[in-house]
Image (cartoon, helix red, strand yellow):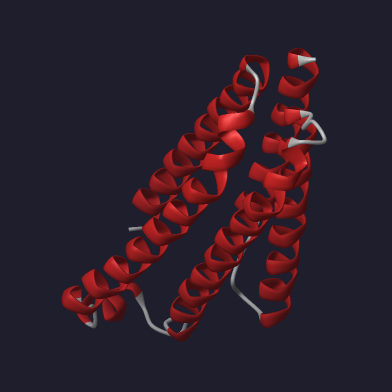
Length: 171
């Protein structure tokens, strides 16, 4: 079963990476479809985690808060991405030289701090939601959860590296 979950997680992550990688903020239609794709991706991730854990009837009572926290975190991420897309869209008419000359490092740091504070709060809520369920998981379920986490973290680090490489090329 662990192999099936690993294969499913890998397939989902590869598909999700391509969706995230293909996103652009050039038009309102693209932004809407990207948000819809991200919501679909969230649904797939929730289903994958639930299926991989194979919750017992006693454990299912702890699932709704976990799912709610996962979805809230994803919605907040979508909102942050939309805000970034809006900011980038406002500067689309400016040349790279104008963008560099008009940068406000203090405003940037404040926006970054707000985003990090939101991410921190979301992660804390997710940990609080997971705690009661995690206590009831069997050792096998904990192994499956850890395997999923490793796949997700590996994919996230790959996405970050791709983003850094692209940003370095553009600047």
